[in-house]
Length: 250
Figure: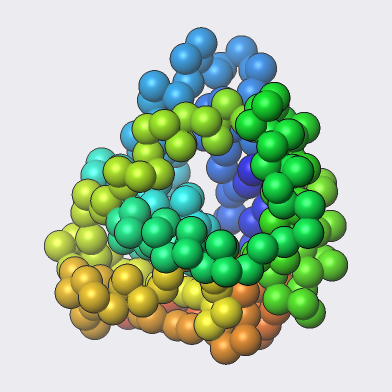
């Protein structure tokens, strides 16, 4: 999905500085442009490091797989000033828990949408499948606005296929806040049924004074749609942590 999925998060967070929405080459709206290489997925996700080349004081925010891409790109370890990982995970073990949960919570039309995508995987059938599974991603209270957001996004089946073939099952973080000292916010909703957030608690390298863990009660995989003030407060805490570290360093 395109990075436009995070636009409302930018508005909710109200953080200082300039916010950029980033699509990797070959994904979202970053397709069929002269600057996009012929085989963009061969550069994933390490190409993320290029986003730091022209910017200063970068705090990178990744939602779900986006956060995993950040942790899989070791070149970022010594270059980020901070990061926020929303509804993300330290490794791929979240996938098995989600598969079990999904089997226990079938959705109307899911078999048909899955069969259509498997028969002819393209941007259109991927969009239809994603919209069918929207109730897994949102609470009943945020489902309507969540579906509207999803309907307006660009989808890229080729990017999805690359992720399935080369990343999803083998992903494991290549660097951590404990090793790098990068101030980090780990944010999730208590009702996130997609990515098991308990995995963070079993990883010592994602604890410490520089790591903030915030859980938004009653919120989904997209917590900013459910409780904007709680998400804004979490980002405010990260901004405070960053400012404190800057004072210590200077």
